[in-house]
Image 1 (cartoon, rainbow, N blue to C red):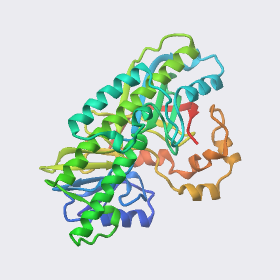
Image 2: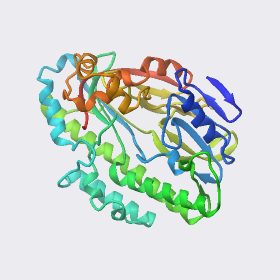
Image 3: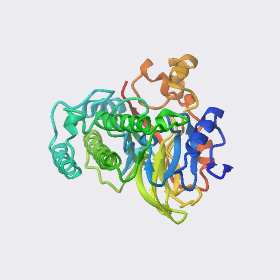
Image 4: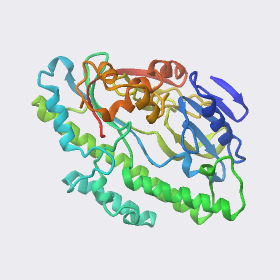
Length: 388
């Protein structure tokens, strides 16, 4: 840990100067309290740094959550061990790919019974929040239970004891993106109206007590609820695929869920703040969490240590070392094949920008996070599913 100044504390041993400068710009805003905490996986983001924890008083920055509201992870520990898995893993991968729509813009064509129940709950929540999600995405109901692309994934993994875990990472899909984009623009328009100059236009904020502020909070909370339901729906489908493939019912010994792009109200250093975690998870004392590595790398089931200086937070993953375009320039499909040796995955050029070498080494990130979380399990992939 390195205290950069009174308003910025950094846990990242690997960090670019531009990332640090971006975080300092956020930390300089007058309503930050007590400081911005940079996680070990911190890297340059749009407006606010990915891997940062941003506490605010009397205002909120929509871009401090970003456009994938509620993005996070879910994991289920099954009763099966690696030794019991005897079938062709490619058959399991293809079954998952058929059960869950993959890639940006790929959604369901109809609702499953479980998705219908979740949609009904979300519809009531939206009515209570005073808005209709249809204004953002006419097909929002069909987005429930879909993965997306980029660093979103579904994996079958094995822990250090040989236990099989099902693991996935996704968020609030197109509807969450449009909710976020709308409110970022509302905040930017407010800055222009009030002649407020900012170090970055994407740090535009909404003032607590205004209609715009509370509209964002209501819709943000709904999108976070959608993201959680989306992961639960996908996980149910993955469990069903695994159960059919293995030839027996899955007993869920444990299910862990956590957001890493979200805002909530918490008390820190004696004050109630709006805490935005952009690429960070809740690591309050005793809270279970998930920290995935990059494609082909280890992931971790953790429990929070409640580090107060870190605002009860920890990293959400490895954090990029190369942008997607830079990764495509620097790495090859053959290198990806080598990195994925022993893992069942769809071999395609589309995943070159997700190669492990494009990310910070996850072991370094976890070493940096030693005073933030305790590792309960280390997971190694045997099946990886991603969207193009």
